[in-house]
Each structure stands twice: as C-alpha cells, then as structure tokens.
Length: 203
Image (tube, one colour):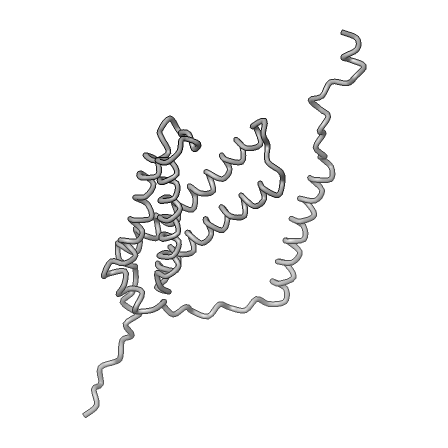
C-alpha cells in the first residue's frame, strides 16, 4: 500500500545555515572589508610619499586587492548559500601562504620594518588566525553537511514589464549624465596650490 504521507523536501527544513557556516561567512566578509580598508590606506601612504609609484603600479595594486576582497567575500557567500566551500578554502590557503612568506621575510631581513608599532613577524602571526579560523569553520562537520546538501532552490524572479525596463534604463541614464556633468563642470585645478610667478617675484 502506497504511503499517503506527503513528501517533504529536505530543503524545506534548511531555514538558516549552521553556526559554523555563518561564522565563516561573517569572517570572510569582514576580511574583505579589512582588505579594502588596507588598500585605501596603503594608497594614501603611497601617493603621499616622496617616492610615489606610477599609475600602472597603483592600478595593479588596486586590481589585486579588489580581486582578493571579491574572492574572499564571494567564498563566504557561496558557503552560506550551500554551493560549497572550495572558493573559501582556496582563498584561505592563499592567505596562509602569503602570510607565511611575509613571516619568513620578516624574520630573515629587516627590510620590511614595522607596522602599527609592531614587528612584521608578530603581525603576520596574528593575522594567520583569520585564514586558519576560516579553514577550520569551513571544514567543520556541520559546514560539510550543509555544502553536501546543495544550494537551496530559488523562487523564479518575476519578469519586468517593458515600462519597468524603460524606467530602469532612464534612471541609469540620468545617474550617468549627472555624474558626467559633475566631472565636467568641476575640473580639478592642479595649479591651485602653486603660486604664480608674478606673486613670487613681488616678494
């Protein structure tokens, strides 16, 4: 006799991820925010120093750190979604490798100096707690079970009507034109802080 009990999908009970998954995702997001903050602070220090790097070096520096932040945050979000912990694990392993190199260089030479009043090897050892913690949380049994169950099914997104698509395009166009007008109407005056030759000759 066939059972009359309705079949309940296992995904229906997956309301919230386990605590280990939430912790790993939260640490990944905070790590990405810290990377962005460090990138902005580092650029400020680079451009204010006498030996200012070229624009290509600064762009490469921004590109690497932006990719690091995006991959780190994406790994945490993929784990929370149930899509797997591979990206988070790869990013964490890369962070461990980079910090290990910094630790060895800091112990072998004094060229790195110090940061925030602390020696670089001490900071590298302290920073190792972040990727190691992410690895431990991402490989916990509850995280593995969450990933093995797969991502939750998503409800189909409603299709936008033609009027809604036109409003979206018009809104983006207005924002783009407003930003362009701000740039064109407020040019940066590079010579604002440079005294003119006439004023200097009078003193």
